[in-house]
Length: 291
Image (cartoon, rainbow, N blue to C red):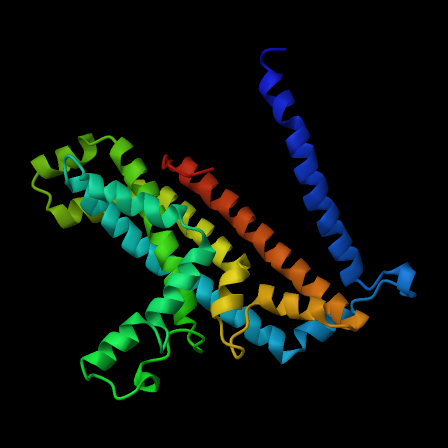
């Protein structure tokens, strides 16, 4: 019983989460297929899926969602890994570095959204500072970084939150890596760049892939950031699903369910890819993933 005690203690929580997630997903799938007897829809049909995939708004939103998630995740992983490697060279690491890690991670996204608006908007701090220096004649001359078509404001919020997360994760793994491989390479005359690219980065590959997938999944499914800082011309999938649910017509609500099912399928596919890739890593003796 002692061996099974931890599992029994978390079983109620797991059952509740599974019921909410699986039950909600099942209901979404059923409704996306048009089966709602209460409202007179008694037949299963894929018409709503065909309607969504033929809608230019959906195609535009899925492109915008992948763009925001991929760009923010890629930049976060590159910058975060670089910062972690630099911090690992500082012995001992300064206390300020831990403040850099902790503060952005602890701040809620809504607080960061307000910060980005007051700093980077056309009436924000940077715009006013540029106006006071005579660099621009009026606030409208300042580049549009919030509510813009390139989603720069959204990406900046993700970078502010994700770069410290990547740095903390990679730094922790990097400190636990056995240094003997790097020391042997350096004793044999290997340059710092060669040691980094041929030894350190391959050992960090599973962790880097982990944090990239986590950041991508969050950026893909996040709602509040693109909803508050996004442009109407670059709506993401979660925001489009929300707008469809707000529609007073039942057919539009069902297309919103279709979009929710598509988001769930893509998220589960990412998890499946994660599992496959890590089997490959483990088969080659590379470990260090987060899951």
